[in-house]
Image (cartoon, rainbow, N blue to C red):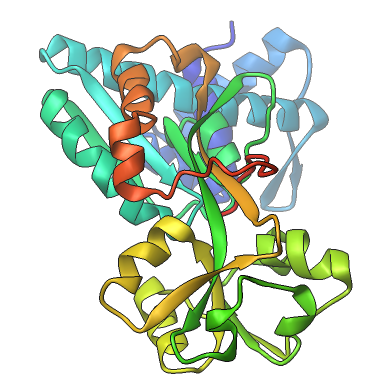
Length: 315
């Protein structure tokens, strides 16, 4: 009764805005498309659309069918793609989404040995999912999510892969460069540079400044890590970054890390995937490779100080 073509028609009519445009995308005649949907409506005993002049408006049943189409069709497309890869003797594809600006450099150091170990797996990294990765996982747009904000929802699984500390980056000649740690009130005179992320998603705000009722002198957003660090090195402001990333820049630029508060802010990077995919060998292998101490020690300052409870926030 209900077939894939019906889901595709409902989805494309909604996307394209008309039966004619949807028919063109689906390579059907408009009459064939209309006939198919009218037959379905008779079988179901309910209307899918209501006609309002020249436009169509989905009924409650139509809205439900559209939700089903948006959920099911990506899964069918992915299944066909993977089965085709198996038929061609290929292993599969691993699409990785990023919700973490500085994690790209970390990811490169995991991807390199992974490509060597799994030459028959295609790897694609998608950086467009800035805090939209959860829906991308559910929508089968990606297979693995690198995220600072794991949401433990049914159907998803998140695993920590390494711990590190988030620190304040300052210029070597800055007044704060020589202190053991920074107190929130010391940033009231500073220009705080961060990635272009909502304040409530920035850990230096929600875990350090806002609990103390403190805001910096000014907040400046910069997209690129290199430019951010250069701004800090030239005395134009301070920034909160992962210690492992700061350590890399400190070897070639005039910047130093300073602890945020006497106990510091401990973090973790999480990899998330769909529960149904956790048994796929090449997905499991990537997660295991990412958490190996050899790779973590190469790129991260692993925290083992008392009182530091692992959390995450590379933002």
